[in-house]
Length: 269
Image 1: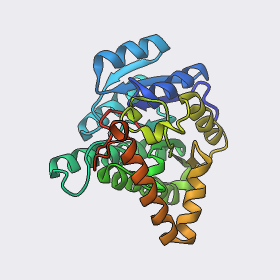
Image 2: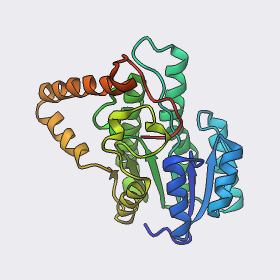
Image 3: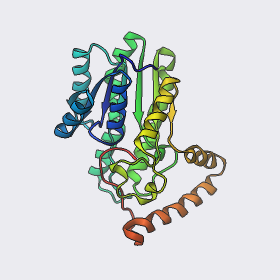
Image 4: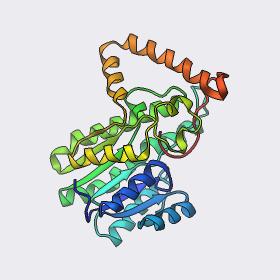
């Protein structure tokens, strides 16, 4: 996909991955509509990079529908929709239902709602690109938060389903599955900081896949290597993950292991 003169929407654009993608898309010549629930910061950042801003909370279907309607009314079409906003909250099965519901709405249903309201427009045109941000946690797992691991698996599964179902009808789908990236999301995850890449690296990998009309976007060689181990020998992979979890927990609070502590900021790892 060539982004020049393409109308592109990016959610979760006030910081982190969303801001990095929106910034680079503008530089590539796209017409960018940036969106975030943080209206003040989102509008400021959008103005700085040369994007138009629309406030939206992706945990609410009505906000996603209003965002899409706004862009279609003003720009006339949407060529690329980056469903990027996400959160990391919760710990284990003791996590309250209201927290499970929140992360499910933001990390899974936001993609569903975007597709629900975008597909009729894209199918009528016979073309369109959906870029859904999941995480390497959707391919492998997440060591701190069960709700994060579960919802990212679901986000990847939904992106796969979209690609299978609509790939022969002009709809392209990509799924962004990074490991640690230097954003606010990893401020409480020292295990991710050890191998984190910059947002510049992530953006370059994203553009490489979009230009090739590909599907899976990763940022670390270890992601697919781990996936291969998982497929070859689940027992071996689970053993390695248990060892890595112990290491991750020991790194929290300067070596004092605290069960279940998870990053709690907006964005993606």
